[in-house]
Length: 188
Image (tube, rainbow, N blue to C red; front, side):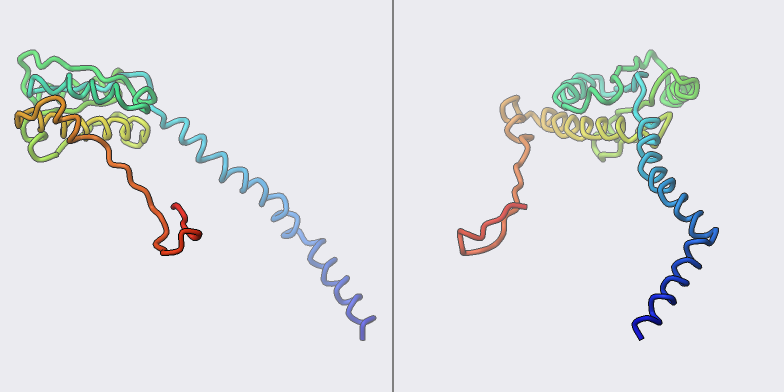
């Protein structure tokens, strides 16, 4: 019985090994593997932010310095585009949007934000980007804006400098295993 298994196994192996499908899949699998690992990296490189600035329209008049201070604290801010204040210059919001959209379409700026009372009060900020899929720039801007809005609100409420620093201090968060046995403690 043992002697009958080997010829069958040999015939099955050779019949599969000599097919076009086997050779095509053998050649295609490594190519697909390389494609699936290299392609996302190439896409990420293309979507990195470019050196063009993000313009900030500060209709409040005193928000931009707070944002600059927060962006300077962010270690990832250097990976994002530079932040520049756009002077209002007597233009309406509609005219400002039109002018800034034109600059974005021409590739002169990365994007823009309009900071007004409604945006501060309702946390309703919209980043108008030339390339909305640019993750690097939108993440660094999002973090800086979040912290700047919190700090700005506290200052408007009359909270002093040291109190603001105390209120916006980051909270450390650690995860450990729930156990009464000190030998079994684990960190997450």
